[in-house]
Amino acid sequence: MGKNAWFAVVAMAMLVGIAPELRAAPRKVHVVGLGAVRRVSYSKVGDPAGAAAAEDALKIRPLVVDGQVKEWTTGDAHDVTERSFVVRRALRLNDVLPGEKQEPGAKQSRWVWQRGPWLLVDRTSGHIAALKLPDYDPGVSQVSWFRDYGAYCGVTASGKSLYAVVAQLAARKPVLAKKLEALDAEGRPAPACGPAEWQREPLKVTFHPAGKDAVGFDIVPGSAVLVEDAGDEPETEQPGKSN
Image 1 (cartoon, one colour):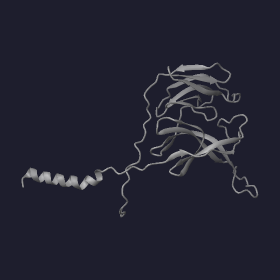
Image 2 (cartoon, rainbow, N blue to C red; image 1 turned 90 degrees about the horizontal axis):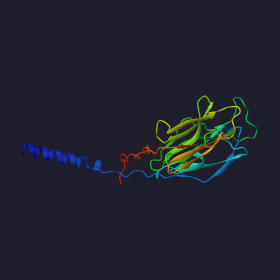
Image 3 (cartoon, rainbow, N blue to C red; image 1 turned 180 degrees about the vertical axis):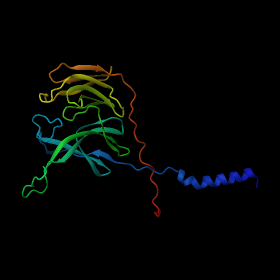
Image 4 (cartoon, rainbow, N blue to C red; image 1 turned 30 degrees about the vertical axis):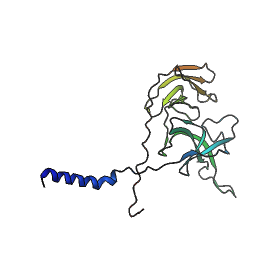
């Protein structure tokens, strides 16, 4: 057998050996959705995250992935793409003070519900990620979503300035960050800013700071920068498992 023929036989044998590994195994299909709405006890004092004046209950829904409750959410969800959506998380916090005794006959410790950060949910991979929106203040910022943009009034780390902010999902810097006014923490109106309003063509967003005239900004549209996961790795057959 010639040298070239020998290499051809070896190459063919290697291809035959790895052929089963090259066949794409089916990917796991996830089932992601929001469950039924329920009302939970709510205290404005216990939640600094934007409670309404007469709010005494919070509407929450479970975020369910493959039949398991992964998070609790509140408010409306917004579809960003056909497979990704954003929704606000609801947090259940332990409200017992250090050394505080549990009331006689109580079955469990005190808990309070709060509005939490926004979540980005991928229906295909089942992945859930908390969004870190620039200058986001849960007690002030009411996010208005359009495409992959979120518009809201943000508060600087010092708490002394109110900003008009437009954030784009997965972008490092905000698309817009303009100071609206100085902010007095003690005399802060509630709410400090109403929900922003979007206009499609031309792309524009209008902010409504309390006690001030509305302020509009033109937005230069750009490409979406949200990168969605390819999904789960192909499932491999478990050792020792036969069909």
